[in-house]
Image (tube, rainbow, N blue to C red):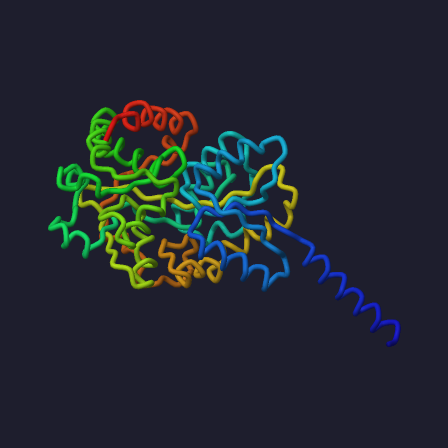
Length: 338
């Protein structure tokens, strides 16, 4: 081998070794299947390994707080936007104004601006109900169509929802009801609902998985989690309440003090591309992508047909408000017998 060829080969090997040695440590707060394909595709296309940990958004925020003085995480991917806004407020995430922002939907750009560019919206999804039509038919129960319907005594023990202390989905439910009804009436509602709840799960996706598998009849869930279960052959349908609902803005943040900051920024940019965002629907995740150029799967909920409240992401994304509402839920609701 001549000298030039040897140097070229050595340089190529060096680049390859550098890429393979790079790692991005990611907390992933979306469905496990989506987390897995992101990790695989990114490693395959870039040579950079993703060290992926799966955690609900409430748990993820708790980890970032615990690691504040010695961060072990580079990027927090997905999960409801409120905890991401709280992380930004507490100085746990890095200010980064992506050059891709102009390609994103206004709600995603607003999420970034609101946080001081310490997070960004990557998808949106409405809150609603999952239900098992076979189980409802067997029990001769109607499909719930409003929030009030869930309080009917015939649903006692047949509803699952996540615990808001560990789940962003459940916190979105509380914040939605407070804005829809007023706080005191919302907590009266939650006390009444408590009597019908069979289980509070740790994860926001747990209830709809239980519905799909016939373990419970009804869940309070993000409706985009339903089609993926149905594609696996499970009997599950979703509906949004006709009296109004909220929506999550799933977000992504770079952790302040990240050990692999440059690699984290490259992963962050990749995950905003249409091709990366389309991986969600390709893996049975049917949120609305934030990049306006991403192709939309027909199973993604039609936002034009849903009655949304004017959700105040700034107020309910504040740390103090989240702590206050969860503490009130623990004291006024979760302490009650069922």
